[in-house]
Image (cartoon, rainbow, N blue to C red):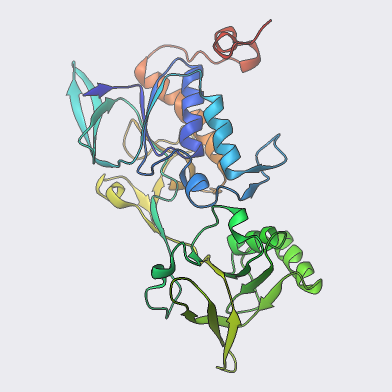
Length: 345
């Protein structure tokens, strides 16, 4: 049974930044994630998607952001356990003190006074296109539910399906490399950022994007790979054929909390209720940070998660060292940190 200062469930950006904030206070972390690599949804679903709202960083891809976080936490003490999931969590007495014990799907056990749930949206799977029988038979053969490589779509006839931010973002981005790009949506109204929608509509005016509304996917045609598709016009019910090489379905994700539902935490829908003083849940020592939590005014932004976990780490320190003052200090004057980073004075 391994003892650690903070158990972090989820190794996405907020989970990784927890290691940095804990390290500043001399605390160690154990991160557990069911994916096979760190980075969460940023690495798994949209590694090449541009991110613009990280303070001081005008532009990064999602994977570049993850890489920067991994570089940032190199000096600190942490363990990373991938391809396994926390299944159970219970309160125990250890050496006359109260701890939380978690068990993983790999039969590993860890104990800590603090658990940080940084599981993003929980476990997730992409929503499939309606009325299409077994679209997954074309996975990696012309059907995808996320963009993992921009180069894959170079000089291809690409059809993007969806009406949210991801569909708009990738329509604009892939228009730079694809042979042709078509955006298909059931209505001529979108749920994404207004600025991105304006960029998309400008590309339509310049004949760099084909906007197909109101349409739905009717069939996928091909043997070993996607060769063409038919679309159904929502208003006329007419079926129209189109040549296609690559289909990207961006209908969002079905979010599942999985074992979190069994941990007896206060929930609001599919999110964990926390206070805004230290982002602790209804159970002492269990914190929820990032997109998984809920409180009045909550915004699902990476930078919001960074703020939340920073305050939560302060409370975690107090739980480990009750009565002691949290050694807060600015990183610019932190000599120990500078020594770890090899900064020369």
